[in-house]
Image (cartoon, rainbow, N blue to C red):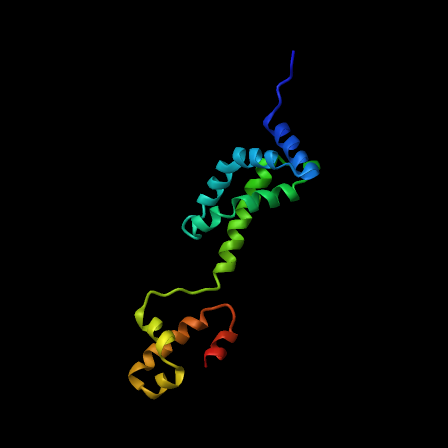
Length: 149
């Protein structure tokens, strides 16, 4: 009687082929098998990231998780990939959090068409300048205010 192979054992064989032989077929098979897990984890961050941008990183995340996976640690590959996908999304949020976006036309007008000196000369626009600097002060890097002054 033939013993059936478990999903985890199949993953381990595919990972071994990928690491040792750089087997593209095994990589695609493992990627296809675990794509839903990747998408499921990323969808939990749909309100904080651009999912289309994250989805483009699927092969990269898969490759990095395969490369760093160590079966002697006792974790299943699916658990490792889920955690790696989660941290990829969190790092993406952290790296893009430093940008502040505003839909207000006055700020866009301020940064695109006027210099700081022009705004200082025209007192009617002083509130726009103050508002712009209030937004800049919210950024983590306090040097940005000095740059714009």
